[in-house]
Length: 116
Image (cartoon, rainbow, N blue to C red; front, side, top):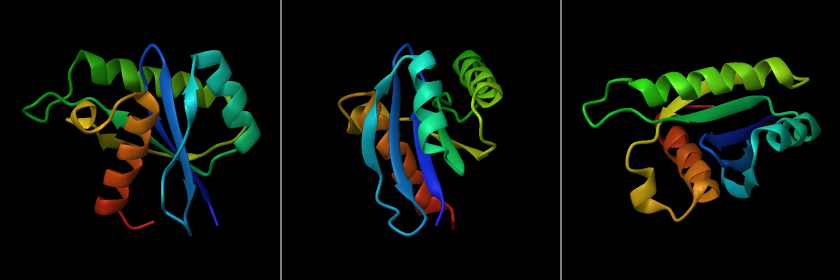
């Protein structure tokens, strides 16, 4: 069984968590970056799925560059080496109320399109 974490990067970072058996994302919390590092060091995820804020035409813009950079920085600071996937998060704010729910939505849409 592998631990999977969904992340919605922003000023506040939403996190959801599940595993490869359950595959039902559960809200884990909302963190600042430093606290996120501490939390990930506790749970040691095997897989991270980060939301990627593509533009409406599906292209990567400035926000995507920021997310990829934040994810790269995060990976350098945690004491595990998870696989990392990026999931299109367009429209997540239409279906969710906050960053933690967005992180769950990111994982749900990831599972619909990927076999893990």
